[in-house]
Structures are given as structure tokens and as C-alpha cells.
Length: 209
Image (cartoon, rainbow, N blue to C red; front, side, top):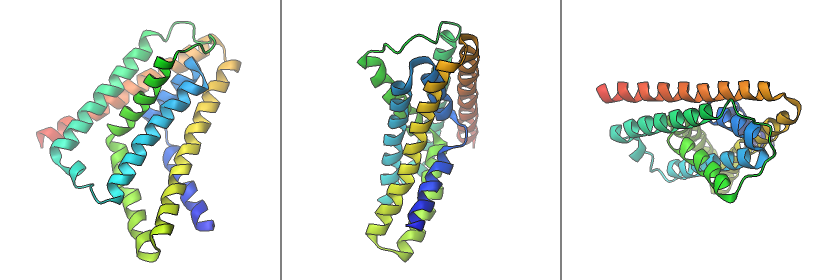
């Protein structure tokens, strides 16, 4: 049980560093409430499961192809910059309104999280590097059942972090003033654009090399 707990904590610690997904979740939670932020995280989790399966079944050679890497850096840059600009468009509007979103916007939140995670090369590096090494070490010591259990607890750690981020960000909007929410939204949007520019720069370097 202690080993499974360590894998759960690994999932939590890997999700905790501030990145584009965390910034997007904070922005969604403050503007639209828990459900929208949570579905964005669920979308990212689905992409995580997809990459987990790719590594698990040994298909990671495909995403190591240089063309695929360049495409992911470029597409990731586009998604992040676009999302950041969309956030900037409405950052100075009233953001403390009650959550009255339709199904379409919730579906959009899910697919935004999915595409952001799927096109994020840092996500790929995690699953290839950290999860790949964990997979190799666990497979050398245990059987398939233990391997699946460890993978499940890593995912549970990621999942719990997403729920926590959605809950905290959506709860904060009750206590924060409208101006402070707008300021946080502005910082989140700018950080997404910054991450997007970094992704674009990395893609250009890879293309030129």
C-alpha cells in the first residue's frame, strides 16, 4: 500500500508545478465556476490516458519522429496563444457573475483541456521520460496487475490535483473582489501567451536543426 501511495504522490507532484493547464484552470474557475474548470482538467486527463497507453503499448517511437515533434510544438503554441488572447478579450469585463453556461461552453472547456494537453510537448516528455522509467522499473520487479495498479494511482494523483485546482479557483471568486479577479485573469492569460511563445520558439529551433 505504501508503494501505491508513493505513486499517487508522484502524480500529485507532477501535476502541481504551474504550467499552461494550471493557468487555464485558474482562469476558468474564476470566470465560469467549478464545472467548467473541472471539465477542462478532465479533458487534459483524457489526453494523459491516451499518452499513457501510447507508452504502455510501446508506440512512443511515433511521437519521437522530428516532424511530429515540430507539429506538436507549433500546434501547442497556437492553442496556448489563442486561448490567452481569448482570455485577454474579456479580462476587463465583469467576472463575478453567476455560472450560467450552456452545454456547448462546457464541451468547449473539455476539448480545450484535451487539446492543450495533447499538443503540449512537456506532457509528452513526462510520459516518455518519467512514466516510461517508472513502467520499466515496475515491470522488472512486478507483474501486469501491479503495473496497472501503479499506473492507476499515478493517474489518480493527476485527477485529484485537477479537482483541487477547480475547487480552489472557483471558491476564490466568492471572496475576491471583481478587480482582483480581473487581475488574476489578466496574469493567467498573459502566462498562457508566454508559454505559447516558448513553445513556438522551441518548435522553430527544432525545425531549423
